[in-house]
Length: 156
Image (tube, rainbow, N blue to C red; front, side):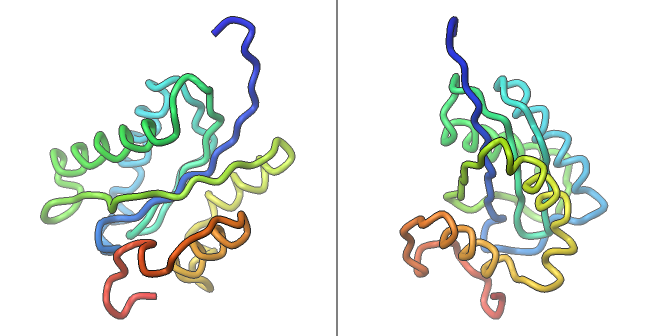
């Protein structure tokens, strides 16, 4: 779009269906590279991507040519197909419905990149549920705990 100037940074978070811990660390790099390709093909800039066996964090520099919902839909559909076709996990893989998306300013970019890259360290002391609720609270996003995600029994 001519004469359109933007600076939009979005941190996206979503989980594996049922919050199952099924993304093996040994295969996560393949998944992250594939997702990065989807993001780039949609004209967006990948700043950081990382995750745990049950969820993923994506931090992008976003162009206004695509909506966040459309981008996340494409990421989830494409990456689910990739995981299933390449048998990165046992059984059928899919992501849960919904996602979190949080905007950040230019001066927060380095901090958010570090945060995304250090997920393994971060989750030694904080569960995904605690992390996600903290993000919703920090950004004053109204939410109902009953509808956030399907939480695997016994997992917090």
